[in-house]
Image 1 (cartoon, rainbow, N blue to C red):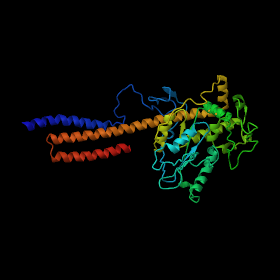
Image 2: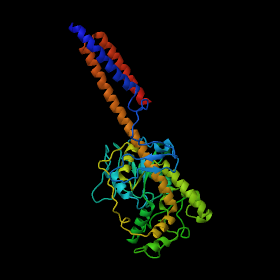
Image 3: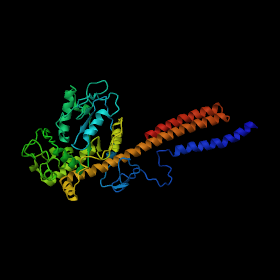
Image 4: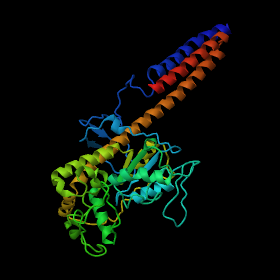
Length: 426
């Protein structure tokens, strides 16, 4: 009688467990096979520029609008940024440091705040750190705080791409090694053009000049006629904002576009080879392409998202979280709307580049967050499925299953493992 009762209980329990396991197969957590209507909106609704991005979880320290209208048509390849950075091999990370974009802070994060098997050796009182690969005495990082200004003070894209390979080969005493063995991953930081311009003005007003910058292009620096100085003395200390904006050769104007573009496309600093309008179009297009193809770029206004994207891109982790600091010298400068319009006009190319960069940055962030959530849901689904299988097996054994049932379950478990590998591959 008791055996018959157990058999009667076993049938509905087994049926329920079978349905639960079957549902997990039909509707895995990372799939859209089973769709239930909900008011919750997805993190990334569409890639096409015809649709809008919806931000459902902005960081606490970064005030974002609920939605942003897309202007640019980015492909999935533009958004999916993960590189196989081999720190043990020949790969080199190259930091293009644009003035007044928060590059000093980010540069310190690179040498002092990354979890590494062999951390950078930063001695007190020294400006540079030694960032060697595990088990080797050559550097994986090319930056101000690791290799110094080896290609010139605040070297731009044109200078770095022609200089870095030779410098790294010389430093590592491998000048005879083919360059194709190395992968150079370029990274940079950008900033809102008006804030960056005001910050540079305040810095120059305090005595900064960057006079030792080389500005090399096509193997030579610019002539005095090509790049005349804006001041006659040792520096431009105390310069009023009006005078700072008046100098036509002021490199603060559209600095971000100039430093990211291939200047050889427009005859370097020789402005007579092409009209100003055409020159601007070529430089902007080049800067956008170079920025889009870089391994990574961050935005000063989004520190936590910059940290998240860097970690996802390179598979590295920072020790301490980035901090958003909005009380900068540029933020303390009060300017009229008329002056702001003037600055935006002087930096029209930078304004266009920043709008492009901001949308690409936020799209990459949303794409990466969605991908991370899918991976987490898949992991939780696999854990639930394993628990269900263990419960199913225990119930069968407790309710009278014999050797035959146990062998069948072992075979089913093997099939499940194979299915799991297929899900990951798909």
